[in-house]
Length: 245
Ligand code: NDP
Image 1: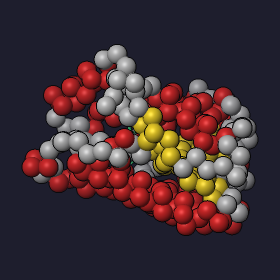
Image 2: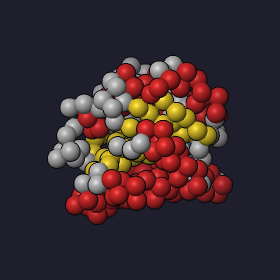
Image 3: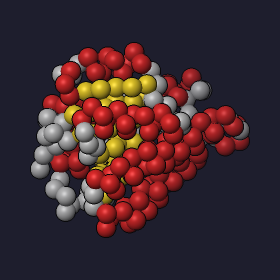
Image 4: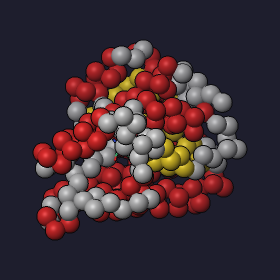
């Protein structure tokens, strides 16, 4: 059980779950390549890590060429890729009858096409290597539908289906797939909600005792899944805050 010397590409690594996972992986001897859109935030995460274990590059997961370039950076600098963690996501919740058409488009592009772009960018290389591990941050919202979250839940249901399909299709190629499904995690995710009151309500909910996880709780789960030996596939990890329904 070890992630030592594994090379892991992480999207959505500039904050929250992605940043915490990068830190924990590096602490445990892995090498990471980090992607997200905000360069300053990526640089700040990388600055906390030993220079020989981290690279970063501005990446928009909705652009296939960006994700391919991030994967190539990992291959060039570290010679291989053990894992890609498709973690980037947004959650601009609102009721359907508010018709936030642009937010629906963004959510579908980032949460769903972002994962597909990751798969397309890395799978040929992993098949060539004869091994690899693709993970995605899904959600309890990939299992349950909540009012105000229909489109977000739709994207996370889609990610679960895509990742499970990937597992079935690639299991004989030695390529593993893991769905990471958290409940509420206290991160910047609320900032993608355009209604200030709804964003504030979510922050208040997360701040109640036992009602949210820390990004580090999810990082532990990712490190566990990544550290298992090749004959083990942790196909899904579902983690709730103790107080969440
Ligand atoms: P954060 O907002 O802290 O992190 C989201 C990350 O995604 C940021 O690094 C952001 O970076 C990145 N991102 C957003 N859009 C893009 C894009 N187009 N291209 C590249 N990166 C992008 O929130 P979390 O850490 O909570 O979110 C991480 C994942 O966890 C998401 O998929 C989310 O849906 C999922 N999740 C979160 C839960 C929670 O309660 N917090 C619960 C269940 C799942 P940047 O803006 O710099 O691009």
